[in-house]
Amino acid sequence: MPIEQRGVDTIPEEERTSGPRDLISILLGSNLCLGVIVFGWLPPSFGLGLWPSVTAIVTGTVVGIAFTAPLALVSLRTATNLSTSSGAQFGVRGRLVGSVVGLLLSLGYTALTLWIGGDVMVGTLSRLTGLPDTGVSRAVMYGVLAACTVVAAVFGYRLLLRMSKILSVAMVVLLAVGVFAYAPDFTAAAPPETAYLLGSFWPTWLLAAVAAGLSGPVAFITLLGDYTRYISPARHDSRKVLRSTALGLLVGLLVPQLFGTYTALAARAGAEYAGPLVDASPFWYLVPLLVAAAAGSVGNAGLMLYSMGLDLDAIVPRATRTTATLVAAAVATAFVFVGSFEWDVQSAMTSFVLLLTALGTPWAVITLIGYARCRGTYDADALQVFNRRSVGGIYWYRGGWNPAATASWAIGAGVGLLAVTTPFYEGPLLALTGGVDCSFVLSGLVGGLAYTALTRRKAAVPAPAAPDAADEPVAA
Image 1 (spheres, one colour):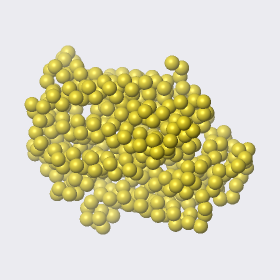
Image 2: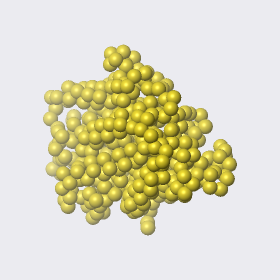
Image 3: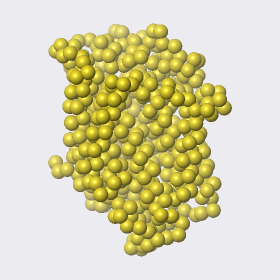
Image 4: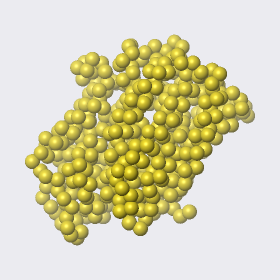
């Protein structure tokens, strides 16, 4: 299979051969991994039992999908990734906001997947073969997983799609077997000596809904376009693509996360997940658990790393996608080492998802408002001005930036950061929300309202009739 040569350029119509079923496969297969399963452990680690954990995860996931899934339609129309597509609202240089947000999201989730996958692999090998569970063995395992992930990401979308189709079947079987493996130890009660993280039920439940449920779909706000840009709107209806996106996210996220909740309660996993998961496993399930940790981690981290390469390629147009992917892999692996040896897993995960959700939500809201205003009509050629290192075009605005969109994102993100609560930081606006983390709602609401107010007198700019107008400056 040849290495993919496409970066963030426009995908030609003849190469847009994927369909809605492929979209479901990639969203299902890539998410059936420990990097997603571990989010199901968060509610029990916050002090919630079975049903509060399940309702928090399901509620957060459904709300997140309703907000996130429509973003898949943007790249269906532009034939490029979402950060580049956001240039229609932010400007061809202002789209760097989306590239940076996407890079941070993918970086964090790649590191988390390698981290948890490597820890479980070392734990299972320790029980199977007597391998010492030391910092050295974990470092070697992180390196092996990272190397395999790089290969998958460099070869690109076609290989990742094939892997996802295989994983969507294999991982479902492995997880189904795992339900029986952990059944004798299962209990619906929260792990012993685990108090409500925020002191009472409802604030803790809402935190779980955001950190474990909502964070899953939000992680895809810049990723969905990586897949739908290969789907042709001439052959596939937008509504079918939207339904496939929602279905892929719903099943792909709920199955692994609810498995994570189930195994966390069975293993009495309070402050840590990987160790108790391995210790509670019957000996006969260790090999399937090892396979799930290895294959699932490479599949999920491969897609995240692929997206990181595209985002870095968008930030530095002179770099090839392959070079950008290698650099991104090195940075992600470094984060794994720092996280594994310096940070507490629960605190690091919670802080990461809440902060990145606050930063990413207003960008997604502004992008969706732009899509609604232009009714899905974009000038795909004009979106590539920055990549060609030229100037002008319908999305040039002021020096390649749309001040209204950029300011609106900054205001929304700022309000979100002021309203967030994490184990490391609590925003001053929490006093106004009764201590409940409303950062997701506030950041999206404020960012969207600011963008609407700042642009209310300007009609959405339609795509120009002549494609050669893309490199001519146009007044905003």
